[in-house]
Image: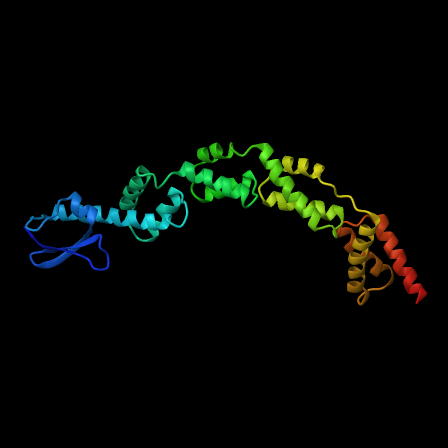
Length: 270
């Protein structure tokens, strides 16, 4: 039966020790494994014992790699498991490491989910559907997803969505109301808010435009459309193309007709 003839501390990693059996290097172990198995010079090791020591050391390696991975930010159990498997640790080793991480408080899917909710809500202004998708992507169970999302009240959702809508309305005053409404609705839907909540928010936003603003919008949209089609079309076909382009931008028909009439008068004047 092999005998431990020498134990030396590694220079590059002071927490690991090299084990020599019968004067020949055999394997290395973490300090915690050395202590756990009471490895000392003169100890005999059978094959079963060496397998057990190696297995325990693999768990310690996986545990330490997971700690490093967790040092950058909080992670879900699913993320940590995937990372360790990608690093080619065996599944049994990974599961043992995760149990240890959970027992010592380094892994807690409930705390992780709560933190993700707060970040997505406050920093990214996301709605519950988008946050739920993010939780699901991180491997959080459906029951815990629902439990965490209960902490995101409808009042909070409304406040976040309204803030986004008001900001968009202020920064897009050069867009026709109909087009702007659609743009905001689509943006809020992508953020993960429900149709019902979006409808309530839209009722609170002032989409009114004064005449000067309308003149600016119509001039910008209409002139651009006119220039685009004037080189290809004329007469009825030109007016039809321009009307379609302006209508798609949310310009009311009566204002489109006024613009077309103005352009015709300009051409007649020429």
